[in-house]
Length: 496
Image: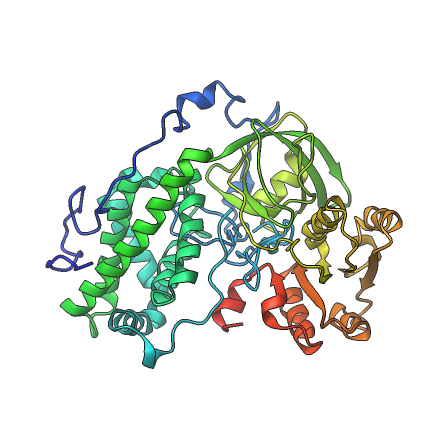
């Protein structure tokens, strides 16, 4: 697509409907698909039952981990690192997601899709646009904070109506939007990876209230920020490349959102029906969605509580789909974690939360009979338990080996459940692994047993455990493409 001839977006103009980034086609809304007035006739608006709103905690400067999706969306979600089962990553929160590919699973990322983990096309083989994009990114890398701040300043000054789409506190959101845009741009030559990533982002961003008309404003301000801080390499050719790339990115997301609008709501209301405090900082929370919620074992969703509007965190489902339609999450309250602390210490039966769409590819391939090697650390055991139930419900007899890691015996909060599953299924082996003063760690236990060359591996837990677990699995002879995990931002950055 040819880019229009124009000057830099940083010229004080506001863009509007017919400017640079206006989509070449506007999707039609499906009849009855909008979630505005109709929501009032469903479960009452988000409300905590009979308890006070947050007070001083709202002044904290460190928030929950970002959403694993880290998408081009204007709302906080948990992690650029996933989530433990919460499950995509611990809340000092960083998004996670996806299989080696990845999938989030902590208070993190992200109904959002995982950040692509494949390396971009080698520089020497890159398209002309990709070369210009990466040159820009290299130029702004040392001043990324300034670029981000300027981007949001432009967005909120020129388009103040968009401010309401973002959380009140922007500290966890600040880097996420720009990082998602730049990540997508960097993968512009890798069509399969890019399209999958963007389609997930487009679907997931519906819950923020993102509309097709918002994309031109974001694109205009992106160009404005880049042109200011990449001035030494910025020219008309570079600007045209960014316009083309952003137009492609936004159109894929818009089309995916429009298609999703026909078949699914932007979000679900869900009522808390049980709250089981397993330890002082871990709760098992079960909710009832207001309408059917389709998902696969091993996936995750994003959660918003009534105490922190527009702040979303990712949590994995702790069971396979149930006939009663209930959904269960394992949540660990982490320091300064707004969403996780609300779910663990404030939520009670009767409270209403919101759920984004399901996401993640850490699911079982039932077309093969390979064994499953599952590593779950902390609340990362939640999606592992769901995978075990999924195998059992399919009536398969494939071997499943579960290594349940924790720092102390006390942290094995769900070991009784896992051992009961082991008693019911002879093909399942559950091995608790407690790190006693560093003398025994999960990777060591993996290497002690095996061989694992005929197994598909699944890893869920905190970022450090995921990294060490993946290394141990590769050392054990499992090909990278057969290792699925909650992807963490650092793994993406290092190209793993």
